[in-house]
Amino acid sequence: QVHLVESGGGLVQPGGSLRLSCAASGNFLRINGMGWYRQAPGKERELVAHITSGGSTTSANAVKGRFTISRDNAEGTVYLQMNSLKPEDTAVYYCNAVATDWGHTTNNYWGQGTQVTVSS
Image (tube, rainbow, N blue to C red):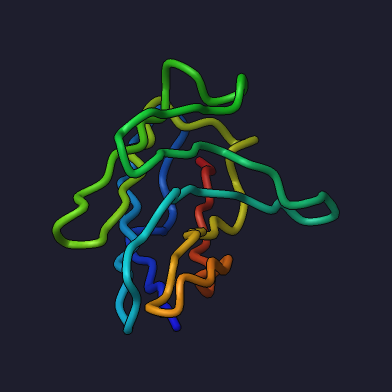
């Protein structure tokens, strides 16, 4: 079982920056891929950025050049640095992790979500 705790959301003006953090805890063999998703009101949840355990990253076209995902494997933490924020980035941001337990079963886990609001 993996428990994901997000932090760093809040209210920011357009053009501003925020850094989201997500810490994984629990009893597991390893954390595989980690990522950030977001869901705006009335819209489906969408992938923002993903990072493998080896550090390879992908990101949505809407955030390329503005958002950067990174992780600290030793701490089991994933970060999302968000720069040049726009009102359309307003959403609840969710941390996601795929983890393998000691029985070598792989499962998908979600954090509780953190609100990011971009408004003047």
